[in-house]
Structures are given as structure tokens and as C-alpha cells.
Amino acid sequence: MRKISCVPVAATLAAIMMTAACGSAEDKAAPTAAASPVAAGAKATAEATADEDAGAQPTQAGRLSVWRSDELGPVVTDGAGFTLYRFDKDTAKPPASNCAGDCATTWPPVPADGASAGQGIDASLLGSVTRADGTKQLTVAGRPMYRYAQDTAPRQANGQGVGGTWFATAPGGTKADKAAAAPADLPALSTVDNGKLGSIVRDGKGRTLYRFTKDTAWPMKTNCLGDCLKLWKPAKPVDVKDVNGIKGIKGIDPELISTFTRPDGTRQLALDCWLLYWYTGDTKPGDTNGQGVGGTWFTVRADGKLVR
Image 1: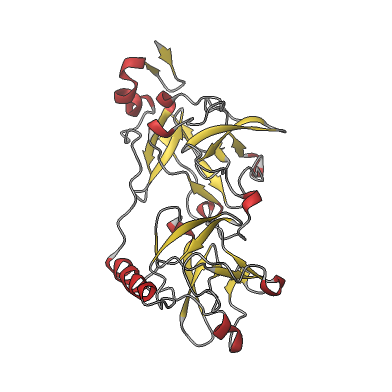
Image 2: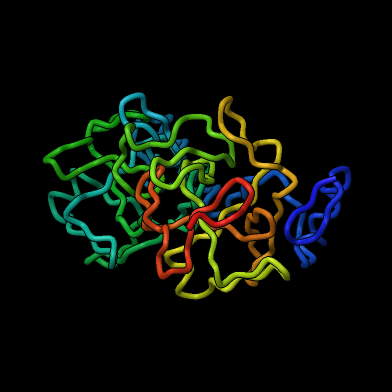
């Protein structure tokens, strides 16, 4: 028999009693299912596929996905597989495009209408910006998205590095960079040895996960709401079968994993009854820029305890 800090839980009944252990009528950890695209997204994806079959770039974004380039690592593509780019002369905060006229002919802006998040894309990072001509352009993490006219087939990245200002987009909205990308085939939840902090928990994208000291575990409650969520994103639930899947990585006890239903109805991952978040200020896998922020945010050990 083992215990967690919330309340004693028998190992043979852990899967059933984790809800009670966290002091709240929440859901048991379960496999995360990909959300079905809305009708507009599905229609746009079909249109994009038809354009691909015709050998032309699509007019709609469709359902975005991730292409793992041998040279660039994970790259965001539209529904037809064409690479999406970001422009260094644009801004993300606030979102603004500085590509118009001839620039927009070479780098066609990607329309926001009909865009949806597919596998590997965080829907919360998708948005739009109104261009000077009144059209809505898709943004990823605030960055306006473009295609490149010289990409004539899916999974090309001929625009990478053009003018020293154009780069393929990584799933987090940053520049695609294989060296900074998360290792392939990470489990949904694992630990990694950080040279400064020791062994800390990360998600399947290699992002460091954090705890907020103003949250509570008994009863399980979040105090990160409103503006707080602009910087700190709730970690999504994981399948307990997809934990610590790589040989040599220190273990996280699946019995400590549960989920919490937030006030807006979305579900959040919890470890030892403590809610987990990732930080938008971490720009690449392995970053720990959120450690100690405000004296209330800290990385986490495999047992759910804070790293001070």
C-alpha cells in the first residue's frame, strides 16, 4: 500500500480512487482524444486537399498539422501540407503584418477563416490579425502566417532563411530549428535531468511543466485565471500508458496522475493533486524561464514536489 499527500490510496484501487484523493469530483486520467474539426475547418481541409491534387497552393488554411523535416525539425503546415512561414519584420505583441504589395505576392498571407488545429498544434495559439486591406490573416502565437510562392509542392521549405528574415514556423510559433526541437517520440509525460535544477517534469513536446503555489491540492483548485492564462497554459491530460516511455528516463508514478475540470470546462493535468502548467516564456524545449517567476511558479519533481 502506498500513500499520496492528498489522502491514502491503495495501489489496487488507485485508478478508481484518485478522484477522491484530490478532494474534488474530477475526471480520472484518460487518453486525450483529438478534437473533431468544426464544419468550416473540415470544409477548408477538403478544399485544401483538392487544391493539392490540382498541383496548386490552397486558398484556405484548412486543418493545420506538423511536418517533421529532416533539416528543420517540426514545421507547421496547412491542410494540404504546404509550409507556413513567419516574417522577422512582423510583430507578435501586438500582432501586426509588415508584408504588403509585392511582398504579399511572393509571400501570400494565410487566411484565418476556416483554419483549425490538427494533431501537434495547440489550438489556443491560433488567432488572427486584421490586415490593412481589411482581410483576416492567420496567426500562430501572435505571428502572422504566410506561404511562399516558390513552394510548388507540399513539404517544401524553399523560403527558409530568405533575406535573413523569413523562416518556417515551429508548432509554438517560433522559428523552426531542429537543434531546439523536442526529441522525437517523447512520452506524454516524463522527467529530464536539468543541469541546474536536477530532475524535472516535462510534457510530450519537451516543455517544462510548472506548479503555481497559489493553487491548492485539497480541495483541488486553480487560482490561475484571466490574465494569468495568457502566460501560463494548463497542461493537457495524458494517457497513463504514455508516461516514462523512454528507457533510462526516471519514472513518474502513474498513480499520481489525475485530471481536473477547470471553471471553463476544459480539463487539466494534475500530478499528486497539483495542477500543472507550461510557460509561454519558454521558447524551446528544455527552457526553464518560468522558474521562480513572482516567487510563485516553480518546476516540479517526479513526485509532484516543487523545485525551489
